[in-house]
Amino acid sequence: MTGTHILRASVVAAAIFCAAAPAAGAATPQTTRTVVYDKTESGYRLKMLEAPVREPGKGQVLVHIRAVALNRGEIENLAAQGRDRSGMIAASDGAGEIVALGAGAKQFKVGDRVTSMYFNDYDEAPPTTEKVRRAVGSNMDGVFGDYVLIDETALVRIPAGWSDTDVVTLPTAGLTAWNAVMVEGRAGPGKFVLVLGTGGVSTFALQIAHAAGAKVIVTSSSDQKLERARALGADLTINYKTTPEWGKKVVELTGGHGADVVVEVGGKGTIEQSLSALAMAGTISIIGGITGYDGKLATVDVLDKGAHVVGVLVGSRHQLRDLEAFMSKHHVKPVIEKVFQLGELGAAIELLESGQFIGKIVVKL
View 1 (cartoon, helix red, strand yellow):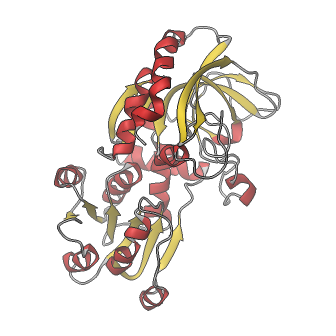
View 2: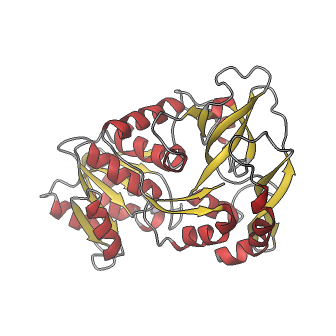
């Protein structure tokens, strides 16, 4: 299923509604463009609609969204995984400005610039099972529209000096990488961090680990991507096509030590090699399953290495603030492959599906 197939009707809709976007500083309009999941026989497509702007309810705010960052979750949703998403607003990561407050909403004021979070009401303690089932843009309405309603507990103020297009890349990919590398992995000087691939989370993991003083190893099937990874701070790189036993190569390159932290995004096709690459008492941070989620993990090897294997479930508002402070302190700028306009959404999804990019893809509204 290609992005062109998914969005054929939507591109037409975008051409119709592009002129509907209000000018900066204008009064809130009566209608808004929204991008929703539209069910087809082979899965879903993204469809653009014009819908009434709704008044915020209790604890909600109305946000004028300026930018949306795309994640791999959009691809999984389009493939009809999980619940019925017909008519659900897409995307979890939006940045914009609050234009109205609902009853009881007291954490923000009109005019505040904010980013959305993947979960509601996740400040510090881990989210509950019920909250996880209500993930923004995955199991409940997301943020892909000019004006959207968001629970105030799923918002964080944008720090001074951050643009909408940069900060919108952080709430899912950046925060997941932060937790994988720093919270769970405790990376720092003297540590080796192995990063699989060069997608959104992986590129953030590379940048964060490098800024923290760790030695970073990056794998990819593309020598061109590995060259770009070295420019971003990777100390060592491995082409896993030419070096299929890359787990052993990691141990060799680290003088027999192995990787103290592995940012595992591949799933069943990479987990065995990741464990092979792991140092004694190291951490495998599992954040995805590009090749599938049903891989086998040899428990005897986990025991023999005293390994810490953890699933990373994005993160909290408090942790996002920590990430933003860290990136500002170390002058780390998000890597954005391309910024698309809303009328180019079909091309943006095609690029996301292709995997031929480094870092993040952003859509401006």
